[in-house]
Length: 87
Image (cartoon, helix red, strand yellow):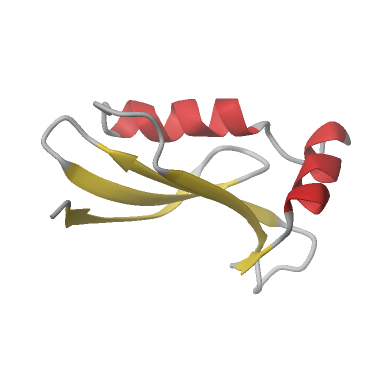
């Protein structure tokens, strides 16, 4: 995923090309009920499919495990998911 800047992200959301951040965050958080707010997020272009976008979000679950989740920014489908213990 090639990260895009916030202005480009705003433009593609406003144009309806991708889902808004809050909807994508809800999808990710539902997979791992968070005890804190989202730790970080970014929109990016899918390097293997130009013109397609991904949304990556980092959430901490109730057990203190941090999850990195990448979603298809158009559909909300989970594409990748990885975790690591919060130290």
